[in-house]
Length: 192
Image (cartoon, rainbow, N blue to C red; front, side, top):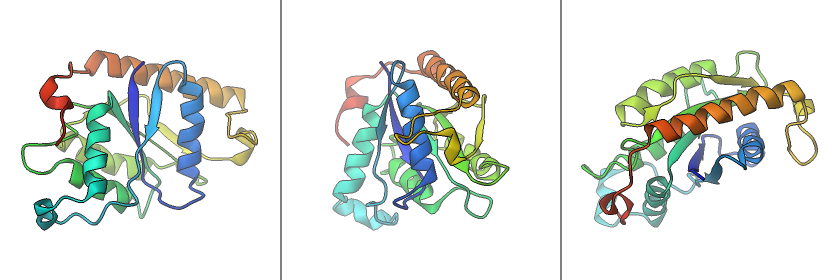
């Protein structure tokens, strides 16, 4: 079963996007394995730190490289994605010639209580993900308006139409991963 490294752009303890991604992970359990990657412990990107790379950065790069695909779960900050996601992406592209994102199938989702979902933030992130060489799934898009009543006390999707919508997205993402994945080589799987 393909593994998906999940990057949640909200660092707050009670993150709606974290809850949303965990709900999708439960739905996807028979098709995809989600592995949540910690990014709150990454220092701000500074090229000087490569002389003695932070352990958190090396761990994150290993987790990206071990995954079959990546999923970015972003709230919307001022009509854009979060600084935490940008920082993780920057660390993942370096050092020069060791881009951990290279040719990784990817997707973006996001949730907010607002009526437009995270459309502007996701659209801003799309351009960056293609520049760093992920293979971004364009459709279907998930700009989710988060309502607590759509989920039960264990954070399972309780609403049947929401469940059907998210299951269609999961199926498409699983097929995207299968169709766009490049075979892993020893060089790709090794430590960085």
